[in-house]
Length: 324
Image 1 (cartoon, helix red, strand yellow):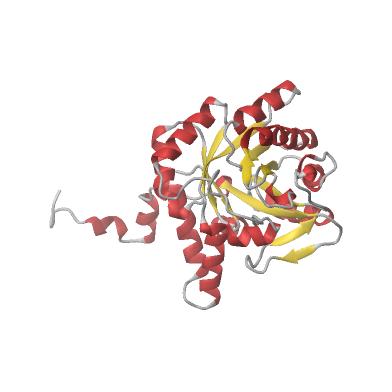
Image 2 (tube, rainbow, N blue to C red):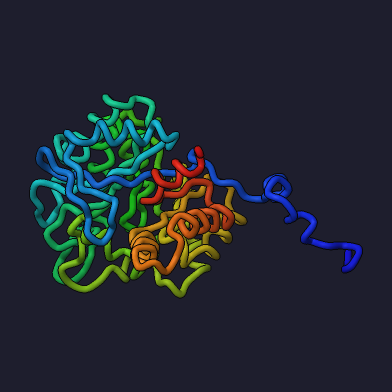
């Protein structure tokens, strides 16, 4: 094909033609809405670096998840802000802790809504790391037992999917064994299979008060320079029986999403993280970009790269636009 016989613009001539030949389509069905659940009552505290997102106490969840479900969004993922913290993150695996209470409340309000829980102890520890600490080291194997306990607590409360985000070696297998041995064979695992040590997490750490109190997370989260390593990490999680894979963050790692989608045949999620959200919100509030247009273009790019599911703080606004 060559010009002038072939003219690519023929397929862009009208809105209806563009709709007919569109290769990638977003749907509310692929969106997952992250929610921050705080200890206490009557709380709805806006997160300053993530406008439009809130820390909600359990008693404020029902109205919020009913809105989510009404928009056609099939799932939420929960992050907890506990009553207290300690060096082992014991509130993370407390069956009466904030996330377990939240799961029960959501399932009571919206039984069909899929509830995913973040499995990581960083939000519950005084040191802010994702594993057990000894001196200045993050210990891998002792952390696995705590992650198993956390997953069991969430599954016992009614979570449909548990999502380990800690990046400890062997965590998926340890959680799968813990779930299976305790009668939760149907509880699925969404693994943060390729989670990078990114600078895009800042607003989230404000939301959960989970910044490390010393050092950083580079010894367990992935080096942003590495792509082949992501393939190895994903392959390990598949062997350990992950049901869904995830890449985090999304936008700086669209190439990683594409690589994983091409090489593996499991459902793939991508996390459009807090820093990505905050940049769009800040630019829009300064009048530099069209917020809704950039929001939808961003989500489209993540799906086009290969993500079947997108965890995004834009989920509700995007769903409203998609539903018309």
